[in-house]
Length: 272
Ligand SMILES: [Zn+2]
Ligand SMILES: [Zn+2]
Image (cartoon, rainbow, N blue to C red):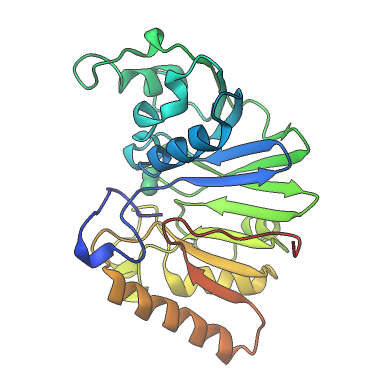
């Protein structure tokens, strides 16, 4: 949930320092959103849970900036021949998604080359922005972020999850974005800055807490999860941002729930 770079240390213990990685489960379908450094711990947990059973995973990447792919070489299941991993995302820079992901495992950067991995990995560039993963229907939407970046909306029988870890609100009312996240049970949204910080970071491709709350209110979202925390925001600062967001909601007398993403946070959809 941390933005830009991992920030371990005593001042980020409660919210956590790992970069973008979220697991969404529906029945046997396991969907992973982004491969930031948080992916390493998820890999450990999956291997422990599945033991000798085979893993069938789908990884949806929003884009290939470091904080969204650096966990991949440290994801335990890719070293297990029983793992099948399908990776979907947009073309990174000019060389394509395969080059963007395998390049970080070249010998200059990493000891194990991608083509020596024993698992079955299939990397696919998104051509169609509507597809499905098992029973979960997925739709992608372009984010406002440097390079090529998307967000995802996942429809499962349990509910709707929208995920936009990196996006800056577009000038004026963005009807397409409001419609895309409309009625989401959970909206996980880039809220890196406060209002003042966002004014000095125009064009950096990130959002602020005030705009995130405004979008969630307009779109009738049920729960907003602040995401992509600024590396300079320690736990106390994060507490203050959550408090501020809740005050904005209270002023509008809305039932919108707001929280900030934390390492290991679990949310159950469908009231189960
Ligand atoms: Zn990012
Ligand atoms: Zn980015």
